[in-house]
Structure formats: C-alpha cells, structure tokens
Length: 229
Ligand code: DC
Image (cartoon, rainbow, N blue to C red; front, side, top):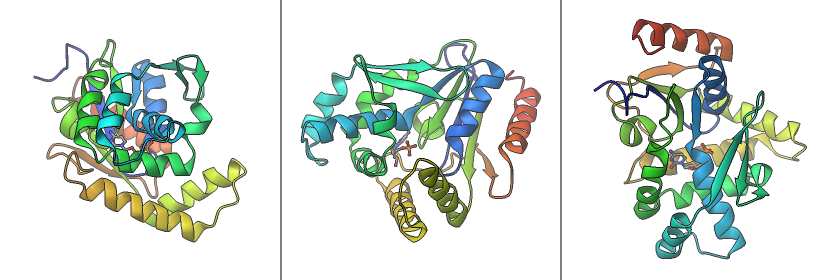
C-alpha cells in the first residue's frame, strides 16, 4: 500500500538541528499539504509536566496527562504555526532548551508514545501530510511513499542551533550547545522503544552543505518521480 487512507505522506525524520522543521514547513507550503510537527507533542507534555510538577519518570501520571491533552495547531501563512493548550498560546515556551531536554526524556516512555500514535496517524488528511519527527517513517507511517532521513554533521547542527538561540537573544555557549546536542542524539538514537534510525527504505539526505532550497528541489524531484504529487 502506497498511501495512508488514500492520503500521501512524506516523513522527515532526523536528529536535533538537522533542519527538518524548516524543511517540513517549506514542503507543506509548497505542496499545500498538512503538517505534523510530532516533536511539539512531546514538548507540550514536557511543558505541562513541568508546570504540574510531574516527575519525568512518572510514566503513569504522564500517560494520564497525554490522554487528556487538548491541543490545537494554528498554521500560519508564512512562519510555522502557533500552538495552543486549550486557549493558551504556548508556542514560545515549548521551544525552550530545557523543554526539549525534558521532551527527549519523556519520549523514552512507551505508554506515552502509544497514546500519541492514533493522534499522529489521524493527521493524515488530504491533500497530503508532511510528518516531521524521529519515528515517522519507522513506526507512525510505515507505508509512507517517501521517507526522508535528514542529517548534518553534529558540528553544523550545533552551529545552527547556536545561531537560532542567539537570534532569540539567549546568552549561550557553542560548546555547551554541542554537548547538549550529543547528549540528546544519544538518548534519541539509543532508546529501546522507537529509536531514531533511518528506515530500510528511507532516502538519506545529508544537508551539511546544502541550502534548504536545494533540499526542497531534491525532494520535489523524488516526489514527482514516485507520482506522489
Ligand atoms: O523535534 P524536537 O526537537 O522538537 O523533539 C523533541 C524531543 O521529542 C526529541 O528529543 C525526541 C522526542 N521526539 C520523539 O521521540 N519522537 C518524535 N517523533 C518526535 C520527537
């Protein structure tokens, strides 16, 4: 089967700082497709857990929290999307470094991951879905007609992340950013359940020296060749 509920899905998996977020938005905009930023789901749970003082290893409480999530994504014309929990806009808060770190710890918990599975699959709606994360190709959309595994060297990813944080006004140190990224890579890649690995049929794309436009062009060419668009 090439499509999910007749809906074409392109999965973009990759490590932190690989550029999958910007690429996914650019693709979704170009194809006029829907988008799933699955990392934001783990971040939202991490944000709420911090607010409610739930321990990051308390799988039971985190599972209950996940089951009761009331999230909405308001996709904007040009810049990503705004994320709301009930009516509160949390877009900026969930992007904080500490929330990303907590999200990668919560993402180790199989019950939390299981509870998010249906929600993620239900985002596959016509005319198509670009799904960005760590296990989009391997577990969430295994029949996707195009799976991209996006990488870049760890130094380049740290440089990009450092620049993003500086642009936001954070007083960060590039060596610390590099250490944090290596720590997160290790946890995401070595975890037992749904580790970050390229699926057997994924297209590996190293964008260390490629611009987003060049990557976009390559994916568009493959999508045309495979009759996905
Ligand atoms: O993509 P991101 O940095 O916003 O994701 C935050 C964390 O969430 C990441 O370190 C691991 C986890 N995650 C995951 O385990 N599976 C996904 N599909 C997406 C994110």
